[in-house]
Length: 207
Image 1 (cartoon, rainbow, N blue to C red):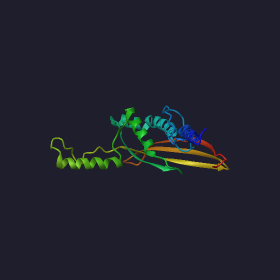
Image 2: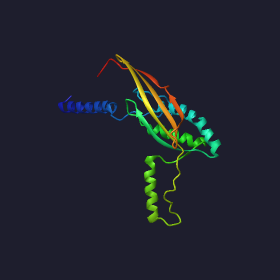
Image 3: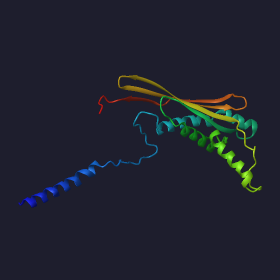
Image 4: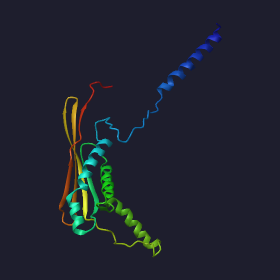
């Protein structure tokens, strides 16, 4: 084989090797679609499965709370509820707005309460009403100071307790929800869920 043919063969072999190897080294992620009900626990921290378990438990208790039934019976109307703050008192980042939105959705769909906009939502609505006074027609402009006052406020918190020895850690979550009478400050219902407990064992091998 001539030197020229040999060089051509080497170049062709290198190109073939590159085409064969580099597709396997692609940095593109592997994506797999799963059912929303699939239990996933990759890190041991709070996740969508925990939200679902806690929300289903506490929402059932809240919807069936005697305070709601008593209010409807005494006043012949549904109580109006507003969502307050769900504090994250845990040691990790938890988006508690997901939990509160699940509460709000389930309670409204239960047909046992009415909801009004939360404090974070009211500002935008009030700005819109104020602008309507100047720019909307008199027939369609919405009146100021005509908001529906809430009867109850829903608040809550998420807390964690951690126990650790060597490479094994236990994380236990406590989630509380409370329904409070706004006028009297009476606590009408308190729900607690402490079903979420995880044992996490870290590998001794480190890269």
